[in-house]
Length: 237
Image (cartoon, rainbow, N blue to C red; front, side):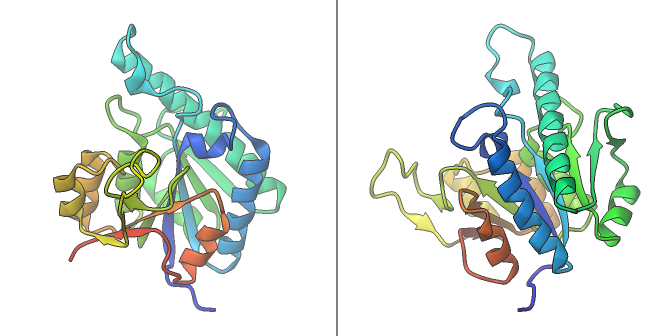
């Protein structure tokens, strides 16, 4: 079966890596995601990954702490997740490279766009950790930024506990409507909290489609690559 995309950026939240625990890392969950990434990579699709850090620390949630310090703590959480994902990919024979926006050479490569693209072109999976390296920017914005920098065909926005974009929280509102297609302006005007406005605007400016889907079944990633209609697609009209 043909692949719909050549180069994708997969955004995985920290919560998704914690499985049903809600915090920390669930190795079984990470391995199930790694196996699907391997399958997709073996198909010849170039895969870059941005990981969140909410399973360890969410910078914006700090109440009695300096926001900048809190955000840097969150970035370190994403690096922990990135290293865990790299290790599990390597266990199953995938050559994976972790790059960090905060330099820590003993742990991972510093983020260099040209090196990242070269890795992708040689079938390596590249994991972008450490957010943008700047406070006040989410890992959603990191995903949008890195996708633009590497010319990704699409952002696959993996969500935990939801299978697409809804008009309201489906866990709280029973008659919430699921959207199959949205424009960037729809997301911004309706105040849909699927990505922050900075990330959405960056995708809009660079015409990068976003596909929101549920990660509880990691096989959804492979289905999307083969062109199945899963989740919610956000793009221009």
